[in-house]
Length: 201
Image (cartoon, rainbow, N blue to C red; front, side, top):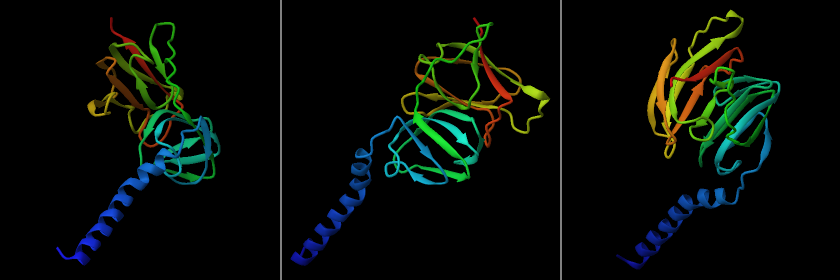
């Protein structure tokens, strides 16, 4: 290889290394804040926001949050974002993004876990390892076009293990290696829907 070709090859190699490593180096300089307020815009993880697992709350107005319609006080729990992903917010509202807290799920008098917000929940931290009957109730006799949707994920890499719509009642067994992803509907956060996880034992 001639000297000139060697120099060109070396320069191209350096440019490629910079292109690959720059987003990684840049993201390490962005620290995850306890909370931050966002409005209309396209936010890139690793550039505008640190990678991490976030809870989302609408502070005011109405927004479309990455394809999901939300209104004031709507919340989403435990959403994980990695480098180069986008959070796209449209509308005139504002949202509060905070570090996910993974608080234990509340239980009703019957011992059922109660899920009031779409999100991703950790088995072992927020609910016990067990077999559950999953069901839902709708207030105000609202007719649903889309049923609530559940995914069981591997906690380590979030690979999909199982998924289903809640038609009437579904039975699923989960353990501490799992996450439960619950979407009350896929395209909006419906405050009239409540999800119940009832231990079968």
